[in-house]
Amino acid sequence: MKKCTILALLALTIMVQPLIAKDGYRIQLNLNGAKDSMVFLAHYYGKPLPTIYKTDSARIDKNGRAILQSKEYTLGGIYILMLQDKKTYLEFLLNNGDDFIINADVAKLPDGVTFKNSEENQHFQQYVNFLTGFSKKQEGLQQQLASAKTATDSTQIRNKIFSSGKDLINFRRDYVKRNPHSLLASIFGALEVPEIPEGDHFLPNGKKDSLFAYHYYKQHYWDGFNFQDDRLINTPIYEQKLDEYINKVVPPIEDSVIKESDWLLTKTRGQKELFKYTLWWLTRNAENSKIMGMDRVFVYLVENYFMKGDAYWLDNEGLGKYYDRAAKITPNLIGRVAPEIKMMGLDGKEKTLSSIKAKYTIVAFWDPTCGHCTKEIPELDSVYKAVLKQKDVKVFAVRTEGDVKLWKDFIQKNKLTDWTNVYDPEHQSNYRAMYDVYSTPVIYLLDEKKIIRGKRLDHNNVLEVINMLEHTEKNSGK
Image 1 (cartoon, rainbow, N blue to C red):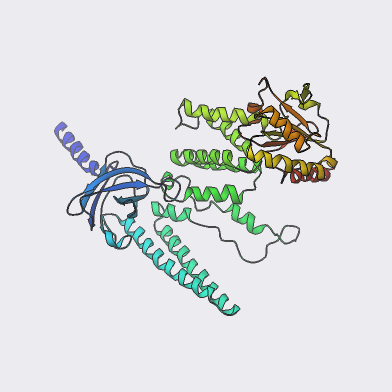
Image 2 (spheres, rainbow, N blue to C red; image 1 turned 30 degrees about the vertical axis):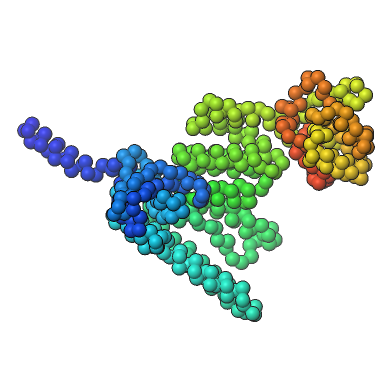
């Protein structure tokens, strides 16, 4: 009885073992036209070429054969075989546990590629072939459109272009219906673009909704994207979608960007690579943004994600750089009271920022040896004398460095004596840290309560910000 049981268990084990998927991959290459050289395995990571990440390599023998293999867990995605010249390559799909053969003629790439033991790559190659034909057809139609002689001809050609585009969309959607859980289905879903319903659309009050197209596009932008498929990070799709959504679809307002950032991070939480890339990209995008006020988004992400342990890939030194940057930005965020500045004036007496009484105060940090400053400061003064002074604006100008005599001579030559000009000969103030001044010029706008209302401005837009503030004040009924 015991003997039978042991034999039965052994038989069951033998039957189950082949069903257990193995980690890694094994890719056999038969490359006609390549020999005695290296081949590299790489993958995308969020963005398109030329950014790729090499993961493996093998030597092609004299018969054009090579084997790439690993027993380590491999996150799937769109992978790349790149030959030694770093110019010749082909794309294919790879999933953890794959074992297949690629046959290709190097001289014909990317055409003429066949796969054995990989049905999904056969489908992927069918899509690549379809794209080739689609691109040629679109190019021909565009040429016809450029040479069309009548409006009727142009309309007919545009209809053909639209119809051809629908063929591409239908190709992808048909595949998704037949293979909903495949990697290629996730890729096709990520490529989906919202189609705005035709016709007029109305608000509940009966008026035409002029913003319907925008709201519909934004609401359905991510419909096809599978946030639960980490393999999508190893494709060239995600960064382009993030960039369009955050920088073009979402209103460039701090609260709006913060809200959408939280939403994206909630959607990707639990997916190691998608979450990592999302948090990294959103933080970098906010830090590098040229839009005034986006630094508050950076501080928010650091305080609510990095400081709470979500940036798992960073060591203490890496985290420290984010903490330090956020600490430098926080005191001078828009909406905060401007830090006090106490420095010596041209008359040798102490001047303070808080003592300036005006509806608006411009704080300008500049250096008389800075080429950009010597152009910007006189132009700022021209706007000040022409318009700003009449709006009860005063200027508190801080010399950051440079020869003192040169600074004083510049003030006299350009007649900046109506400004409050100060400097810190003993280097006792901490203005660089308080106002994040590490290059010049840096220009802030404060209101009558010394609350920061604008930062990193110039003579071209300081008046625009003041007008916007006055418009808001007027409409608020103050």
